[in-house]
Image 1 (cartoon, rainbow, N blue to C red):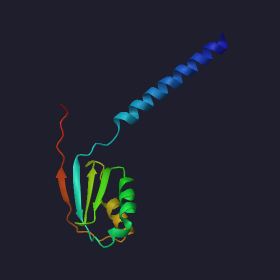
Image 2 (cartoon, rainbow, N blue to C red; image 1 turned 120 degrees about the horizontal axis):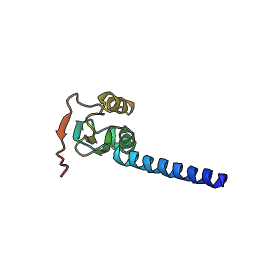
Image 3 (cartoon, rainbow, N blue to C red; image 1 turned 180 degrees about the vertical axis):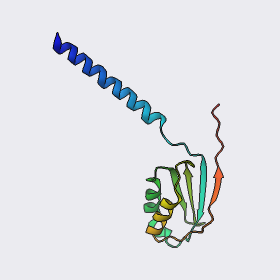
Image 4 (spheres, rainbow, N blue to C red; image 1 turned 90 degrees about the vertical axis):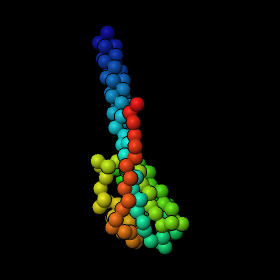
Length: 113
């Protein structure tokens, strides 16, 4: 009887923990609310496009990053509250990419309806 109560309590606790963990991860994802466009020198992007995109996508505030070599623009969907300009500049410096100091920022319209 004692082992059954212990087993049932343990199963209930693990199920509750899994349920709470599921809700925490499903509702805590960043939603992009801005689009940042960075004009860069396209010469260095030809060889490092995939690596730069992967590095930018690892940042917590960046939802997606795409590079257009033809026009020399990096486009990123970001969470404005968590975005850190210095972390993006470090990644661009790491790959030897020169960028303008003025970045174009557009607000992404959203509705909760």
